[in-house]
Length: 265
Image (cartoon, rainbow, N blue to C red; front, side, top):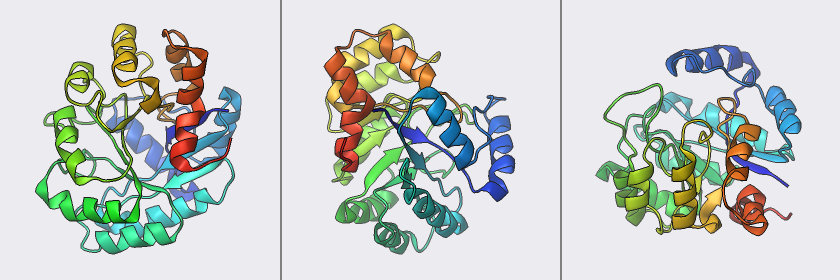
């Protein structure tokens, strides 16, 4: 079994517009799906993925309800797990977190660049406290982002600072921080935090990837792609090039995620 812990999809009526806007903002990345759930499902089958976690992002306060309603719809399909989102500037963010829990969603996603907040900003403490009370898995876009420049809002040292306010499983995407392997090794490896390995193929030197696996252990790594921007099969090629035992690869590909998501495999 393969569980992809980091994918994106959009409602059909906005998928084309959203995917083209994001591709342009990223410098022309070529999307591997058309942004819809149906297209994601087709590409999952092509690359041998059984379950995808679909991460929603509320890029402004008014989007929360629609993003989370869509996540709840996604979550009803057997091959998908939907995660919700809240925007830090929304006056009803705490209430919306409760609604996310009531909808049966297992987690939330933050993108500190699109949402314009530092992950270790004091103003996030009430949101993190509510998330911890509700027991929601929390995923952060971490490190650099192709569509933005300095200052980046979730560098490894910021994530390290924020961990003290979160008493839930925390996932730092993109190997703990895209483009930040040395800082990840210094600030996050060995801490109580999960890394998803999305967007590593072709962007992370193999030597850094191996060093992160060895330092953080496969017990805290989650297979992920960042579909539609990277294919699962690409990330599999990176994993298969590393010195990892068959048992540990099974942890990365599915067992760790299944444990976090409480999925029987």
